[in-house]
Image (cartoon, rainbow over all chains, first blue to last red; front, side, top):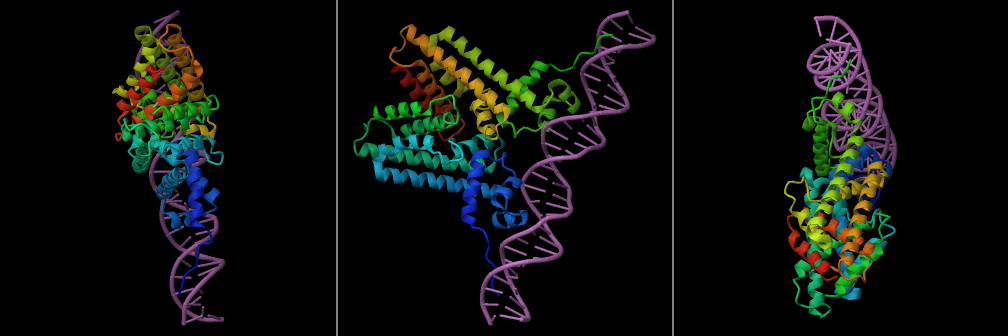
Length: 191
Length: 191
DNA sequence: TATATACTTGAGTGATCACTCAATAAACCC
DNA sequence: GGGTTTATTGAGTGATCACTCAAGTATATA
């Protein structure tokens, strides 16, 4: 009367898919790639996730959620300004990550022109992240870490833009990403 | 004894292909798309360009060359620092361009993980652009527009990183790219 | 005009794309 | 153990991928 349980760890599989999509992108990842890496036959794959796009959406969701969580943890530990500065180092060190570049940015850049639904989702997640940054700037002002003269939303937009640039630059071996990160952090201290 | 001339304008076709690749990316552009837009049947396409990748390489080359040319023109007109500041506005205004984001960055982001040859070419072009920026910073120091205390190469790396971030941000309608550009320009003046 | 040359055409190549489904196997409750 | 339910399997779907090529056509020189 009661069913059989799947042999795989669905949660771990989504993490694994996120890393593959993150690294190779949407078009760069085929079903064959996923089936091979996740060790799932087509039938199981579609029973578990529905479609390639659905799995990608779950991966994006998880990526964004982890990003927010991590940022808040750093804020608890280092304070708002400390978190913003630590994030710069974190994203370019990240030796375990599939790539230094931001998955949301890569997704948006790849799929925006085609008005793909996943681009819209990536965009939404980036809006959320920007709001997190704005919140941290606001809290940094509240505790007197930076001057209250600047608009937190404007600071957040600039910070996010710089972070995206930094993360893309960190993918290139001809640029010293650490130096750029230092310079961005120095600008933060100058506020 | 002598041959027939092609009915198309090869040069214009490469420009057109550059715009399509720029907007939709490498995987996002199919041969069918190119054949339809360039009004070329498969046979003519391959006679003219050899392969999709070969045409993409020509498009990249042209994109990079135009970028350098434009930058130098602005330097003649506005001086080195003026060119660097004007470039910020130019890339986010660019209403005629297929997209605000940098084609070199998009290409690199899409294809680097697969070690595609085009990613290497995009990387090379970005190195060249960075050298142009460094040259402008050097000249800005020489004419006293900015302090000689900073390393021009380091300034160039930071500037290029910021520019990439700005151009990606300019693709989003939830960010005020003009404000970011102003803030980057203000940092430039502060040097 | 005759002929050589190269451009144009479009059906067709095998490979790969995301995805389906019927058959089989395994785990659960009674 | 019997019966039910669901997971697993993998061959197979039509569509699209980048690309080829032989046949037909237009334009140059002689």
